[in-house]
Image (tube, rainbow, N blue to C red; front, side):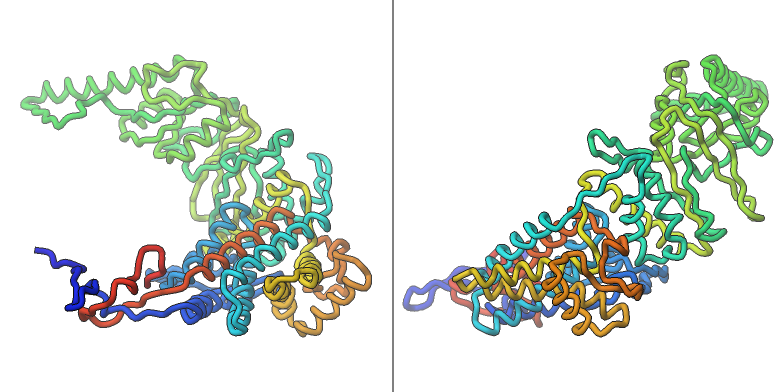
Length: 558
């Protein structure tokens, strides 16, 4: 019989007690002490990825439990692969993931900002300011910062013919990545891919029409944009034609095999005649299936399932090229691109359900005899595939992540074409605005607002430090110039070009990305500051505690 976790009891004076079996295994921290322990955990995580910020940021090498190596400076990837135990530190991991899901870029910056805000919170707690007052001050400061972002933002015009501004934004996103050696080419690919699928009237970019695939071999410069679909398959028979022009695709999710009962069955063959009869039956069924396909006018079969050598031989004999074992997502993408229908039964196949493509061809790589299938000149020209090449798997994976960030940055401009300027310029400008607003606040929140302004300086400080510059000197110089020249475009010259005007350096950040960073970081800090009690597990023993001191749901437990 299971032991009770808690027993209600009273002492000789009738005072209630709860006897908790597991309570002795927990140690408690209350109030400011609990908040400080949470801040320490979150700051530790933020400091780990702080060195990855900016174009001169360093990469991190992550080794998984099975020995797989990942080298990246993408904040969401680093935090996602770290084995974080502390519950508050896990909140920072989720913060980075939510920035990645919503915006796709700026995952490192949002964690650095959250870490800086928590660091400033600790100083305010030491001064005796209540955590909720700090959180309220941060919220007011965040509202001021977002207003300032709106006022300093510029609209950038673009069209399918004029891509210059989109290219600059993509190049800013790619500047800190491993692909920066081929910066222009990758930026062009990201912009072309987004514009190929974008609906500019509705300001919408359907990401499911952009497929990013990669293969080890070649160099990053060999990366290409394919106006169509690329699948890692080849023709099912080596003697089938490697190129089909004016293709009519039958897209099937049913296998090329004779029908059989779906329940458990047993077939007994007792003579040679019965075996021959079965073989003839199977051949007849195969021929019927091939005839159904050919009668619709199809000249290429895309099949989700496999088929045996006999079916393969008959397909080749009937001059009907086929591709087998094509995965579900690829089947759906082929159907979208060729405007065909996915057919579950041979009887349902008609000429109207066939997909159409100008050319389907096999591509061979190097001396490995690896082949892939390219479907081009599709009926729906909006589907595109980015084919990434690289000298090893690690570089290919990191190039894919870099392209994802660049595509998201371009997509953000399509959705909202307002930009602020990078290099910490927007953060410094917002910091000045928040400091000025704090002086006009009569309540105690002004201290929190000044701390928020100091936290905003963490991003330009990290950029300067990672670029080998003197952080405080560089920041104070740029800040004073922003105030005296009234130029909100001045930022940290990370590339050493001798120019602090980020507009002239073409360092653009989408406005919605920067605003989301501020909002998410502020929300996280408020959540951490509201946790006033935590428990930690210790050795097992039973403890008796008064009822007014019981840990209840909603308080952190580790």
